[in-house]
Each structure stands twice: as C-alpha cells, then as structure tokens.
Length: 264
Image: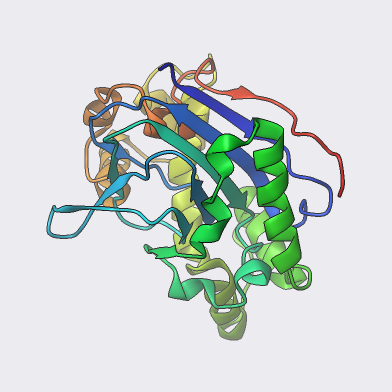
C-alpha cells in the first residue's frame, strides 16, 4: 500500500488556534522513525494501527488511538507494525491551551491518551468526513482566543527576533506553550534547517545550517543529538516514512492541499 501525506488548511473558526491539519496513511517503513520537533503541539488520531513508541528503556509500547502530543525537547522514536492511518491537528504554539484547558507544560515530551471515541469509525469514513469530524471536535472544545502577549512573543521568535519578556511573562509563556521562549527559539531554529533543505538553494546540511543561524556544522550535530538522538547522516539514511513526511528534506516530499471550508 503506497504512502500518502497531505496537509490541510483549517477552517476559519479554527484558524486562530490551529496551524494545519495533516494526514499520513499507507504501509509505513518498519524502520524506526525519528520525529523532528517543530514547536507546535498536536492532537494525534489513529484510524489505522497506532504506532509503537520507544520508552526511555528502549522498549516499545503502542500509542493510544487518540493522544495529545506536547512540545518535543528530546528524541521521540516511533515504529510501525501495520498499515498506518493518522490525522494530526497541528496547533499554533500558543493555540492548544484553549483546547486542553490545562497547562501545556504538563504535556511537554509526553503523549497523553485522550477520549478514544474520537477515532471510532474514522476508518470507514471518506477523507472529507474524517476532517470534518476532527475539526468539529476541536471547535467544540475551544474556550477563548490565544493570549495576545504570548502570541507576540511567538511571532517575534518566528521572525528570529529576541522579544523582551519579564519573568512573569516567561512563566506564562511556558505554561501556555509548554517550553520557555529560549527553548522554543532553539526548536524553531532546528526545524528551519529542514525547511531550508527543502528549498533548491540549500543543498547540504552545512549550507542549510548557516542559512538559519548556526555557527558551524558541529553546532548543528549537537542539536541533532539533542532533539533526534542521531547525526544528520543517520537521519538521512532512514527509509521514507512518517518522519520524512513531517520534516521533508526535498521540496517534492510534501504535497499541500486546501481543506474543505464548508462550515457546519
């Protein structure tokens, strides 16, 4: 079964909180998949066979059908052992608090099971109906807009600026985003390497690293070990799968399409 990955623009009633929805399905590689952090927490819904996740002891346990995945600051390794079918809701960095109603700092580096009923029957639905059900679920749980002060800091970090922030504001940021501003800045810089590699002008890791603000290749390698637990070369030797779809290193790896904007 061929693999397919696609991204979808959220409905207008979700746009303030949700960056994208995404879908991955097919027979994934049975090789370990190292997930690249992007600074955005996610709601993950499996309508295929849930992935196995490596624990700190190296043993793998199966993820729940529905999980909330908080910010990633250390390696996350997944493994497939059957046909995959996943829908992800990729929240904006400060957008998930209104969905969870709990501090995002409680979810950092955790995949927390949520109501499995959300995944029930999804496999039997068409793509549009799956997306509608997931978006309806998120919309029904949203309570209030994101904090504009925190949004301003996120925007500054995305623009590679260092925003002024009091200690109180930094605490609010960690509570609402899941990590302090400095840690989010490091995650965003690391993720930009993959964005740079997906552009034709950046052909090597070193070129991409310099383009996004790394001083040298060893500094990039340190972040690879920090966030992925491997070297750049080891990451590239992985066979195509979920990891390569979520963080492509070529411009042809992802096909982005517009979701239906039909409101219910």
